Length: 319
Length: 244
Ligand SMILES: Nc1ncnc2c1ncn2[C@@H]1O[C@H](COP(=O)(O)OP(=O)(O)OP(=O)(O)O)[C@@H](O)[C@H]1O
Ligand SMILES: [Mg+2]
Image 1 (cartoon, protein in one colour):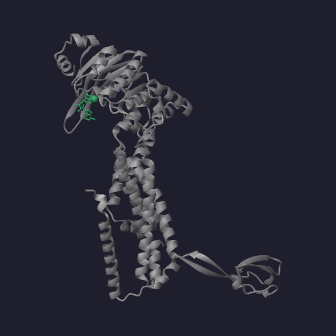
Image 2 (cartoon, protein in one colour):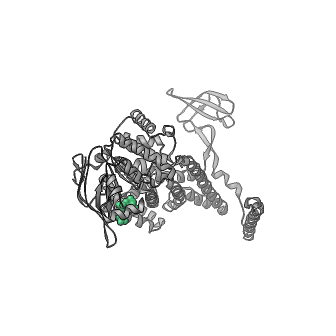
Image 3 (cartoon, rainbow over the protein chains, first blue to last red):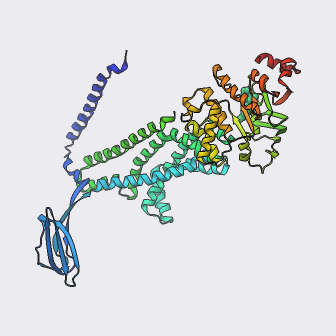
């Protein structure tokens, strides 16, 4: 019996289940008479913005140069100041020699801009990235403190990890913003990133500690017996080996961080989740927007998983 | 060269105290090869580990080249540069190539340039008979080859003393010989060596002196001849009967 031979019936079963679930959902939505408006969604990714180009002074149109779709208009003021503006040829509103007053419209230019979903995604990404870097540093320090011989360091690290892991992130974000943010006069971004970094750092510390302790003590002994100091042993021997071991749980933690970052929307940081909420207040396309937002998170996290998978294979050469 | 005076090492467990090393005194001359034998748990490893500071002993003195390890001002890393150690489990650095295993401490501790360290490393790999494995990772080597790399790694620091803790016990029988050969060669070159081993043939061939330890104490000292022909103590006789 070979298990791989008979995989196709299970694939079909999987497809059938998925189709049933989709159909069930569709049917249920049908019942409540929801009006799907998917066509409204794309504009929240990218949209074409039309900007009126205006003359900044009283003056004359001295030159109009048409070059395909765009037209360059040269404007000269009464005091011989020269300004050029680019507008779309179709939207040109002036001709050569025309006299204009300040703020008269020369024409329109249009440009693709990022919509709120993309901006929100961007905020989520950089917020998570910065928080990850700090979480890594914090977790590394706390993890090292946890395995150190010094009682005080161990105690501090233990208190930090226990306090963070014993309280909900949402509460931590509120404390960071409403308490620490007010006392130390911090911006909401600093509070949000700080809370996320502190939160993830506590988990990273545990991962780092476990990773270091998983390296056989013989490694430390060999390095020390060669005269290497403890910091050298950590940097050259223990941490590189531990890093390889902790890469999977560590990346899992950072992927969690991206998802957890959605909670900072409660302190009015316009991340992906907050953007979704804002779009809904103006479109009422509740179902579509949340599904799209979920899909965007999923896309980011699965891309990241792929990167980690690739790195793991690269690091496996010495095994 | 090495002088141990009444060395005691206690391990504190849950309500119990183990006297792993219990008042060991001995002296090792420059160029001497001392073999330590004894039953499991007799404190051989612990004593050896005290000599390069991997264990901090509880009482007594160990003086290496005039430096007392019990002295708080002694820089243990300086001492370790002079005392090489070879472990039962090799303890090679698995994430580094053989060459990097040999050059790392030279560069970090002896502050040698990459070029000098690599020359030294390649010369030592030649000496232990595996120059062709320089670029391999340790996991690709047989046990015997790994242990020879470990010996070369310790030698790269140009130690004055080499400690061996059962260097052949984790090896398949057919690889024991190649490691012992390297050690014999080293002894022949006049290296000061303290070797914990159950290889009586090795002891007979190269040891200047044999120490028999039991329950943390040195029970009997003598030449290999003495041990194989006329051991004095009952415990020694019993032990030798089991291993020979
Ligand atoms: N880290 C430790 N903590 C507690 N007890 C220890 C520790 N290391 C060794 N011991 C105890 O000290 C005693 C001596 O151990 P040691 O390893 O030195 O013996 P050994 O002669 O090397 O034995 P073997 O031939 O099995 O290697 C043993 O009773 C052991 O249980
Ligand atoms: Mg031992």
